[in-house]
Length: 244
Image 1 (tube, one colour):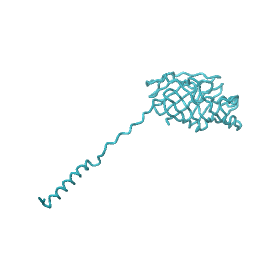
Image 2 (cartoon, helix red, strand yellow):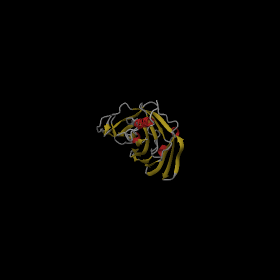
Image 3 (cartoon, one colour):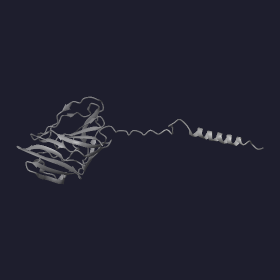
Image 4 (cartoon, one colour):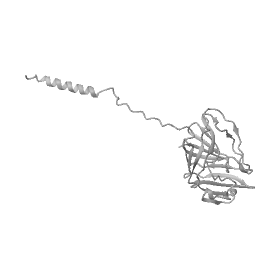
């Protein structure tokens, strides 16, 4: 039986309409995108950090010591307390102190790396204001008042910064220059283990174990960290860091 000519045309039109219905939906709608998970920020002080500067207002052997500069040190702190400090990009830290009655000025810069481990088991977590105590330094130095172990301040944790085990500083080198009273280079890219009497010439401003000496740490939320090393044979120094 021969179909009328208009029947195939109607059938084809129905097929095209059905195909259009299958491909046309709500304008702008498409497959649902999978949300990108927000990276989890580890609890401070764990994570990767970069120093923004160092400072000191300690008194060493009866003479005041000021220190400023020192940005660019890369520091990583693991959940187990493992610490590595890379001083490759460190900017010099400028110091002013006294040797006898003579004012001494200069700058210090480290090269290489240092690693070790600190005990983070006493880290605090509640938002309370810690009591502070002054820490006596070798040679009569008095450090900045520090919070007790496990204390907290504001919305961040603080606690004892206590190295445990051996600190590996075999690759760490130091350069110390004086700008006053006479320009001279005391130490030029020398391993810290080989630095001797030059510390007296720089007014005890040289820290032969930076960052990995006993002291305290303080977290300002999750983005800023302050480590104050206040004992262990060096000047009291405050290291300010931000998340890298």
